[in-house]
View 1 (cartoon, rainbow, N blue to C red):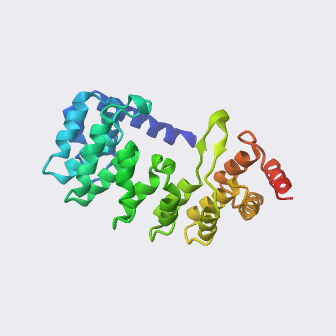
View 2: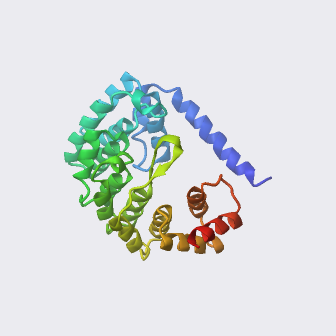
View 3: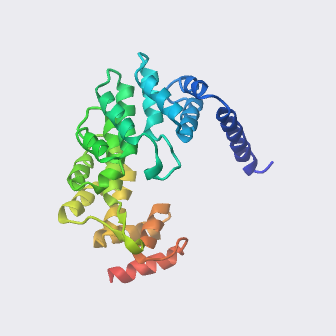
Length: 279
């Protein structure tokens, strides 16, 4: 038996389970979302199939679930609405505005899981109204809600994104700090595939402060954020990691981007390029 066979078996089993779910009716799928606890893999697979199906029937059923007296059903309905029409271009995803309105309404839900699901729905839906609602949640007492704020891709395009993300980089929760640091470090693609990064002394100072974070993922994101802005300290730390046995794939990806080199460039080539920039 080769080492690949168990993985292939798992993939085969997952594909068979997906095909079985795809043959179920919408009502059967929604019932399946309530099986087990919140993290149940089979239940989430049913959520995924409903999202991909993305029909009017699915939307109406999700809306009905959101109105249920059962808090677990409300959370599942919101999770389906979060990515209804998944796999389609954003402009073709159905019932987006309606889903945003439902999610905002459930930010006042009496159930904590439903509130978290509503926040994540807004994070995925990412309309202007959704982003505005998320910004108001940046100091929410639930760290998973704050994580949803930091995770929102569309928030990064908001005029006030930098101070909001800098604030979340100081969060007491390490995952929130990590995602906020990642979000601030990420750029938007402009014409010609050129990456643009927000930059300022305040932004660089925020990254520099995260270099001492107790959470390694946040420290790495801070290094990459500085290096992408050609900050000497960030590039020196990036070079140090590349030269060590402790490098991550993100170290190589960041160096390739800075140096405008193709993927899978040798580490030696990346190190030489960074040394030339630093010189």
